[in-house]
Length: 142
Ligand code: HEC
Image (cartoon, rainbow, N blue to C red):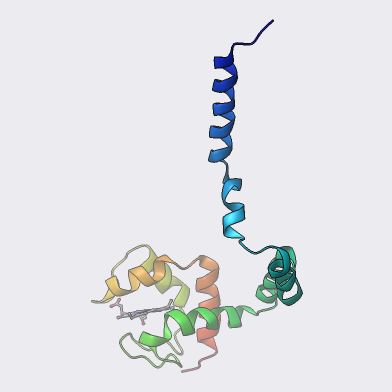
């Protein structure tokens, strides 16, 4: 029995179409480092799984205060001051209901006249982030 040519062509088109839709197609382009480039990368930074593991370890080795500090210095200090002393935004050092206040902003609640500024800042914070921030702000005293 002969399979008509048209079916062969049609099914190979389907196969090509299927593979072009998979996520694997860009691998070669994304990791455009092979041969000695890849050998050097392995020597300097380890295999991708070793790098991921190192990153996870470095994250899990941080205390909650340190994790809070990371977020604070990057996203909050500019307005609330390097030591929580205030600036564009109110002082935070010594305040102890930080998580509640941040959750209120995340829920787009109005607290003061400039709450809208904080809505955007709070959107990106997880509950864990808020707790870590509160722990760090606790260390700032008052
Ligand atoms: C662009 C400036 C800006 C940035 C960045 C910013 N804030 Fe604010 N923040 C404000 C302003 C202004 C207010 C007062 C809002 C109001 O009127 O309700 C405020 C209010 C607050 C309050 C309530 C204080 C109180 O006593 O009522 C907390 C808590 C707070 N911010 C924490 C943070 C944290 C944590 C970050 C970083 C994730 C952050 N803010 C980033 C400007 C900023």
